[in-house]
Image (cartoon, rainbow, N blue to C red; front, side, top):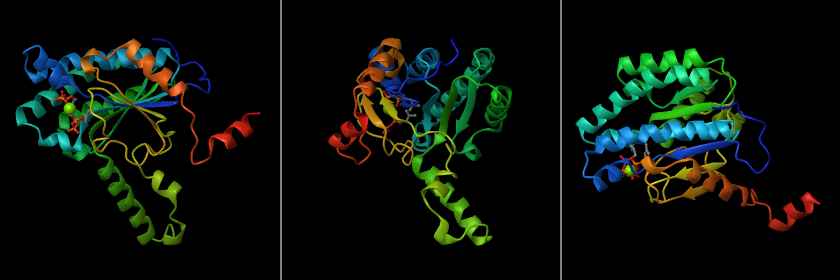
Length: 249
Ligand code: IPE
Ligand code: IPE
Ligand code: MG
């Protein structure tokens, strides 16, 4: 893995990924769903390495949603086991590659042993200056906004901010990804075209890239295709195309 290089303007700065399709990948091979999740870990590794190689500074991966708690207990517990195992196995290598690893989501719902691994991985890689990798576990966009709102309300109640001074920046500053640039490219594998309660606030202006590839089959070429798709988009942020073309001359 290489150090992230300076990004050019056609490269996304922050890629977010909804890694979907593990269960179908397994079913297509007459294997248990868990085999698909296990195969998915390899795609995670490939994606992290290639994102760093392409010089993209931020990557946020959706690994487990607040709604995924509704899955059968056995699948949930095997997934949690896989997170612990992957952390154990991968953190040293991520650290060697200068990756800064952080987790977003509701830790109060996770087992203490997993939270300890998460905290130690975060502390271990905190000073790294390469790819900034966020992994979303037990994360929901509505949960994130609700928690942020609660924190803002506490600040209003204790008088540290006036209600009239609460603006978008104040709310954004309380979200899980506070201080990071918003994802400018969202990739979802597995053929569904929905957000599934991922980063509802932060994805406001993301370019959306959906592909049919099931997550365990996702690799470097697919990632390059998504980056190429992004490079061809004109990001207007409410302006007209003509306004932007005038600015460019
Ligand atoms: C994504 O794959 C992984 C998680 C949600 C944990 P799925 O498990 O949703 O795979 P499909 O959608 O059933 O194929
Ligand atoms: C979204 O995938 C969550 C993750 C990839 C972690 P799901 O497979 O859970 O989404 P839905 O249920 O099809 O919307
Ligand atoms: Mg799915």
